[in-house]
Picture (tube, rainbow, N blue to C red):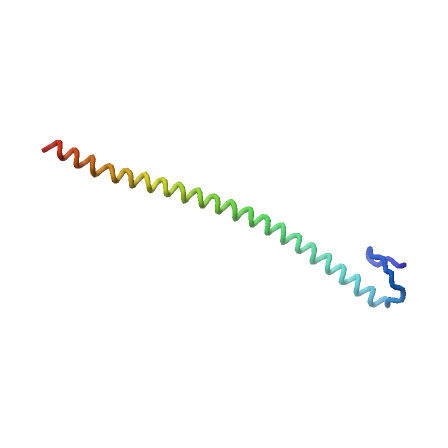
Length: 90
């Protein structure tokens, strides 16, 4: 049994060219696997950044809504205060 790049060749009589092709294919598959691992890491990183961005966006939206409601409440109470003051003058 011959050892071909970490794999045991169980079939006797396989031409050397075929064995070399198998080794090249195995190397190519290893490179593809490494690339996929790198892409998976990048994907995980981008997903984490996206989650952070969505969370900060949601927080900013809530703060803006609270500020808007506060301004609306102030605007609604100001006219009644002015009209109360005008009525007191009369």
